[in-house]
Image (cartoon, rainbow, N blue to C red):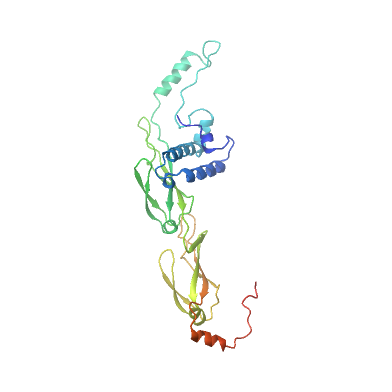
Length: 283
């Protein structure tokens, strides 16, 4: 028998849907089998957490559980009979046998939804693509990550959850995405930011430079006398459109690198009469 879902998630019965979701995500990240390989206790805890959230994360199931219509595993509760003045409370033997008959002849019931966390890289979330999810029981699911996905997005695989009862349809698999960071891309909404190193010669004289983007390298032309710290926008090279969201841009911030300084450059700078200039005037 499943434990009280409120106790499993560590929330009170008055908790909001957002509080329940936050509690689930925190516990799921701690006990996820991918982060605890070979740890049976963590695997069992993750199953209990997923079962609890499957019930409390669904407003209708939560209401039915609070009313006592289903148990902590989502199963229908048998009718409760209480002794009364006539031997039984309520409407007597006719009602009792009617309830028993209803329970025994109940029609097909849909299986429970099952929840999983899947770790994806920054580029997998941005570009989308197939992803294999290994399940605790040794099975696997093929998940298609939509382009432009974000951390916390939940994908629904219909019919991939728990089997139904009495010939009912199976539940769904709900896949929540966890997205890792990238070594040089940073995402802000639909835009992606990149600090691009350029040489002193490229900054002064201008020219073509290669810029990495999530969808592949592109060539960008720098104007002569471009200052370090200048931010250039590559339209449509950010996060792809997803749902109601538009496609984002890639914002490229130039970082001037001098590189190894040779004697010729050193001699030139010593004899160079530059106009008065304070590079730290804005600090």
